[in-house]
Image 1 (cartoon, rainbow, N blue to C red):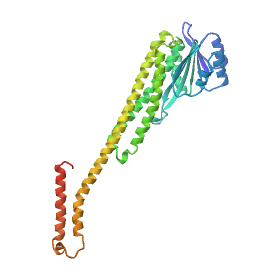
Image 2 (image 1 turned 120 degrees about the vertical axis):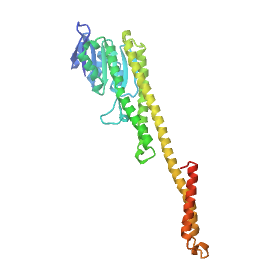
Image 3 (image 1 turned 90 degrees about the horizontal axis):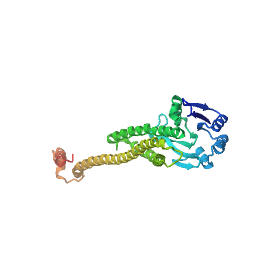
Image 4 (image 1 turned 30 degrees about the vertical axis):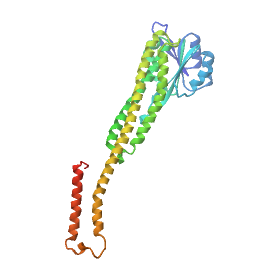
Length: 328
């Protein structure tokens, strides 16, 4: 547990890192605006949230727990915001993207955040270090900076999905229905499941951000509303892209099945044509392969080339008919 004390009243806004619970408690008692960053669950941190900041026990349970669906709730002394972002492990396929939870509590003089990955808050911490004035306007603007960065994390994942979908489209047209395309169907279904899971989260998160942009909550001052509307607009485009990619994958699945079916039809067509040609040849060979003693052609000197000539003539006639009908 650590914190930053943001001095908004000074002529030059500054921030001071606080590393111990005692320093945090004293700074809050002195009326400082705090950004408190929680990491691992401890009894001391839970007691500080409940007794010093007045956080409801159910909220504390949500902060330490994992929830799959975003939400926003207003309590008498603070606003609870639960949102998610995404992260693709290094070297992994976009379908293996992980959901990371970020809990934000916005009060009159504090912002409390809990993230399982420090990368969720690191950019905003760097922003605060470079330019303390950017976050000196109050807890609502700290929350906005966190949400804005969180939404931006979806963009690389969507770009990766776009590249994978384009690659799948090319491979489907070239290899569907062939030995080289055996893994295409599983990749399409895997990516489709990943986008469905992402869509379920983004739909709820879009509603959460929409409520934040509508000035429903007293803890968000009117001057912060344009910034939250901007975050909502950016995330609305994210959800639109997720829906578009799901529709593209559905189309790719249909294209895969269609191309595979067409290739199968071509194979069956070739086999049918070969069978059609071989059928009369088999009949002729079968007739002259009968072992009857009384057959006029058996003692004929030119019987063998005659039979082969009939076979060649029948083959040529069949191929000519197929070509005129444009079957080959």
